[in-house]
Length: 70
Image 1 (spheres, rainbow, N blue to C red):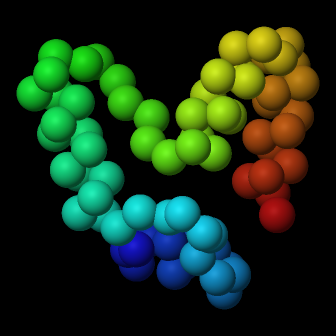
Image 2: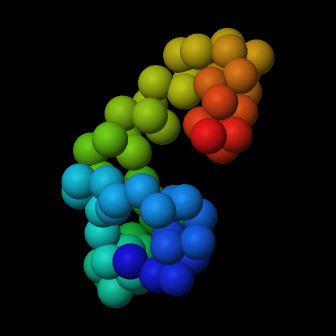
């Protein structure tokens, strides 16, 4: 958890399954060493990333807007 989370969360608690910055970096470096161009960590993030390919872009943008406006 970083200061960015504290500022961006607006006082909300950390989400279950959130990773520390160190864990994020470790996973990114592991993927880099394996030659992967991208990595998605965490089950929820993987579901969102996979599902976003199935939803029309206009609907995905509306959903993202709602999340970031909260």
